[in-house]
Structure formats: structure tokens, C-alpha cells
Image 1: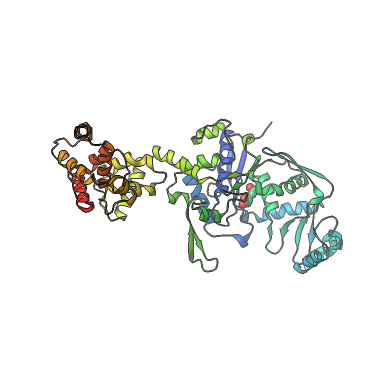
Image 2: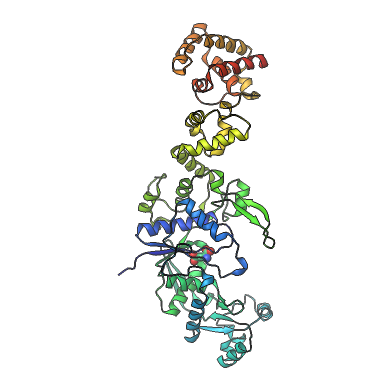
Length: 508
Ligand code: GLU
């Protein structure tokens, strides 16, 4: 019988989590939920050189923000812990010994200089069946000699003994059968005595086995490691999990991977949350990488966008809740080809979810922007009305001020382009007369005012566009904004007429 589905997200804490890693975790999450399985969170921190403080916390906070929950792992607990690889040294030592005892791994003593000399002497040198006999290891020196060296304190590594000439097949749920010949593989280092730690490969497969992982869903960059992993499973006599290697996330243009630098280049974040860059030695902050959260993207938008970067539900549905994605997700509908990162599409999703989100978020953002610009937000109700009226025009909350500033501050200048088009010789007269007419009306409510104004314009034989656009320019500073009577409603009689008359006086 098949085992219950167990998947894992296993980042190395080497810095902020790249958006590609977020997608990998999302796909694992969707897969786990769909199958009623479990998602584990493991920290792969065996490379102490690359450890970055704060990275683990950052990753956890990112998923909390995004609404992706883990069932087991670092900070969540569970029956398969510890889930931090640096806390599992003894476990790995034991399994390295198992391979050594079975003759499937061996000790090697070659130092840097010796390895370099071998590389110099043999073009395309690879530590394998064809060369290991000439190197310093327990196969060439004999086990007794090797043990002597170890007892005398000589540093060593343990290498995996790869038999050449064997076909290795990786069954990939996205790519199908990936076949390579073991001859192209080298005797990978599995363990280093110097830091008493295993390398990524050994720790990764030992943990996947002990944690009962059934499916390894990870980025394409790990595909080249998979044949080796298949051989390791075989060497231990363990069943290998199912593999699925996700397509690369590509830069907006060209065939390159989406990198940190692309974010700067194209002006969008490539990290979920803002990250403070620190000097490795002093810990001093030297800069920041921007994050989706701080830039005003909604988690729902980021998730929906990422879900469709490399997968599609088989129809053209693009807006999906997490629950819908869980139902529809299918690894066999993942593409083999890299997916181009398209920020416009993410903005489109963000626009959609902003229309549905709790308006308080937008009201708070607008209020802050108004105050930051030295203007008066008037009242919560006023801000809320502006938000209701204007939110369909924005993709990000930070665009609110730009779209709504005239509701809080009278124009101080008038846009040249709009003036050219609408502030013709008759404009001052139109606006003055319109002001007089409007002033005489008792009911300022747009709904009653609009038909009266239209009737007045028609009676005068004026052109509606010419009058109303000139008037709009006096209120807004340019020919943009929502329906004009929505603006006069909000500004009120006194302020609307004041702005119009000031403009007539200034612009003549
Ligand atoms: N620690 C690896 C990473 O940082 C895990 C790769 C895997 O999922 O096997 O992505």
C-alpha cells in the first residue's frame, strides 16, 4: 500500500528566501494538502561557512505572512526531530559508518595540493574509478594504513564509491524518466572529518529517509544531484522518494535565472519580506533588499501569481483561492520549461486582491501618506469615501497619494498638457459663469446638481467637454480623476468654488 504523503521544504539558511524558494514551498504545500499529507520544515545548515544569522527566522516569518502552514519541523516540533541538520551530527556519523562498513564508501586523505596536482596532471580530472587508484585513500593504501592515519590525526573525507557503467534512472513526475550513466559521476564527498559534518547529499537523503518523505519536490537546480541521490538510496537499501524538479524562474527577459540583481534592474522585489543586508564580520547594516510585504503586495496576490509560474490548472482560470489551488494542483501540469517572471502580471493580481481586501488597510495607508505630505486627512469617514472611490485605480497602496492627493490639498500648479488642451481663451469665462450658477444652487448634492449644470450648459450653447474639463483642471490641477460630481461632492461647495475661482484668477 502507498504511504501517506510526506513532503518537505528544506532551505539552507544562507540569507533571505528567494521568491523561487517560496514557489517551491508553495507547490509542496499544495501537494501535501491535496493528498491529506504532511509538510515538514527542515533547516539544512551543514555548511557553517554560509550560515547567515536571522535567515531561519526570516523564512518562518515569510511563510506566516503568506499563509503557508507546516505540520512538523523547526519551531513546529514533531516525531522526527531534531529538524535542524546541525543538531543531527551523530545520526549522519552512524550512516556514514554503515556505508563504510558495507564497502560502499571509503576514506580519502588527499589534501588540497594533491588534488590540485591531480587536476593539473589529468585534463578533466574526476575522482572516480579511473583515478582513485592513484590517489591517497583507503582503497589504494589499504584499510589498516587508513586507520593508522586517522588514529594519528590526519584529516580525511569519506567518499561515495561509484561503480562505473551503470544506468541510473531518476523517475521525475514532471520530466519523466531522466537517465544517466554512472560513469559521468564522481566519488562525491559525503563527510568531512575537519568539521565532523556530512555534506548536503548525505544529510539530505538520510533525513528524507528517516523523516519518511515520499515526494521530493524541489527546484530544477537540484536535478543534477538526483542520480547520485538515487545511488545513495540504493546503497542503503532504501526506497527512493518520488522526485519532481520544478522549472526555473527566469528573469523577465532572456534565458537567465531570476537573480537578486534583476529585482534592482527591473524595479521589483525578489524576496517576500524586506531583508537587512549586514556586514559578515561586524554585523553592521549596509543596505536592504526590498520585500513584497513592505512594498504593499498582498499575500494572496503573491501566492496566486507564484502558483501559476510553472503550473496551470488546465483551463484559463487565473484567480484562485488557496483552497481552489489545493483542489486543482497537479504536478503533471507543471511545465518543464523555465517560467518568465512577469511583474505586470503580479501587479494585475495585486490590483484584483486589493479590490477585495479589508478597506482598513488602504485607509490606513492613505492616511499615512496624506500626513506624510503635510496634508490633513480630515476624518476617517472622508478617507474611507476617497478609498472607495479611488481604489480601482491602484495596483499598490503606495499609489494612493498620487491618485488622490487633490482630495486633501488644492492644486498648487496646473499640468501643462491639460492646460494646453482645456484652458483655452474662453475657459476663465466658462468657469466663472459656472461658479456663479453653482453658487446659486441650494442643493450641492452631485445627483441633483449634475442635471441642472448640464441643462445650464446646454442653455448657454456651450460645449460640455470644454466647460467641465476646464472646471476639472481647477479642482484637480489636471484633466484626470473620477467623475467630476463625485469630486465636488467630496470637496464640498465652499472648497470647490474656492479652487475654481483661485484658478481663474491665477491662470487668467
Ligand atoms: N538545502 C537545499 C536548498 O537549499 C535543499 C534542496 C532539496 O530540496 O533537496 O534548497
